[in-house]
Length: 217
Image 1: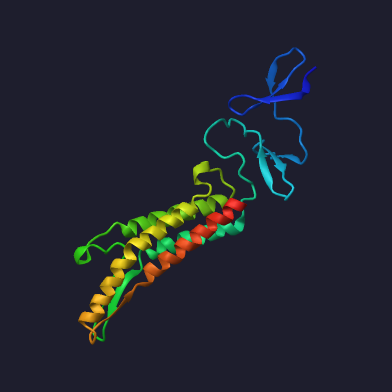
Image 2: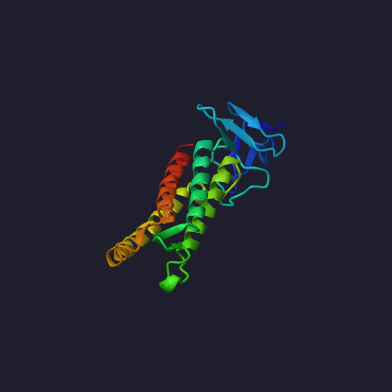
């Protein structure tokens, strides 16, 4: 008869129990308070004192694959929504004007893709777009409790810092351009920092806040 009181995990995290013959056999895992099983996946979850569910033992076929088994199933919808909002704002900011100037006769503006010489291409818009897509992806994954590599679990802080550094690298040159236009043609043009660059800064802050919230969930 199997002795289901002695349990261990092998080097891949799979549960084993010691049988009466002295050998170890694969098992679903030891009993524990608040233990629940997903009938579809067979994954075991344990309820924490705060009511959240955490994975208990490996999922079927799951080994040391770089996924975070300790990630709460209730992943913090508030933080996830903050991440999605931050990602959307980052994505939009890439296409909006980062600098603009207007007069009674005409107006000019440059997006994050047009900060090169003579309205030439710049990678800043591509970077903002990429950071936005990644941030949205993280938010959706956390909102739907999808499995993800553990290095991506809280990295909206990283994307937020990246967006903040991008803003810091561009704001000086944009302000200098604004002052140059206003000083050279005070009666003709009114130059200003574009809404896209402002939105980039806001999105960076929201992304960092989202990451901090997700760390606590």
